[in-house]
Image (tube, rainbow, N blue to C red; front, top):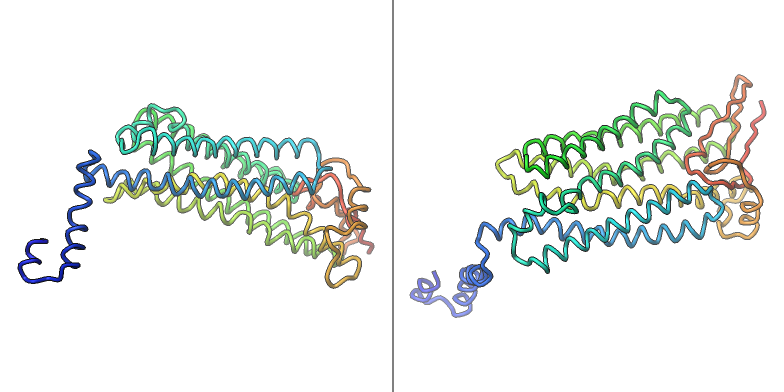
Length: 367
């Protein structure tokens, strides 16, 4: 092609560019011993690994800040909750270490050996179990959000089906991991579809159900301050659930591309799968750390201040430290007196699981 352009008198810079675009990739493949087919596999397999792991490591930095903020802001939380956060921190650190080690093995130890990298899905336990590790981390956070739903609904028959859906999702990934090791691609695709569809459906149902009970409780209260607290919790429910649900949806879509006439696109789900556990962890920590802002807002409303009192206000901090409630509560127990003059205890604020509360920790609404 370059010689043809030379014969018709093409400018020298065009000749040079045409020769580079035509011959350099071929020469590079010959020098590196990578065929054109293997080069395509490298792009579709290692590309999502690299991009997903880099984003995962960035999100680990965000999550680290959330862990530090939690340790500084909520030292009076119950031992059980602090232990749950510590376990979440350790699990995510281990997952980030696994991502970094995977990139090192793929891109440094076995640079260009795509066949070896693909074979690790059956021979390397850490590669085979990577989707299962992601599923375990997701399930850990899903259990926490199920406890929030129990706190606001107090109905086991509401929480149990959603929890069992998440259990099924975890078991589906266990089966998928088994078929990964035995190299049965069709079964892997089927169980991945079962896992990811269950996760996505469970997240949507959990968020909608939690919001429903918050809205229903909000309609029964007579206090403006209590209604304001509930109003703040409703959007928080969707804000924390949306990112993980969206990524799970894309993960599901690309995991099924192996069935289409473009099966290489199925590897794109690796990138989404690497990011998913961090989004779940961030949603849990964001929910826990949001208590500070909500307390400040509710305290400001009760004090009649348009701006709300600052969460760093010494008087506010003094009240927060002076009052400790028994058990895990998020802002305290709300006593709601309805129009029928019946008092109902609504543990809406248990959703955050804090052991201390502000002055609103017990709001008695008289008829």
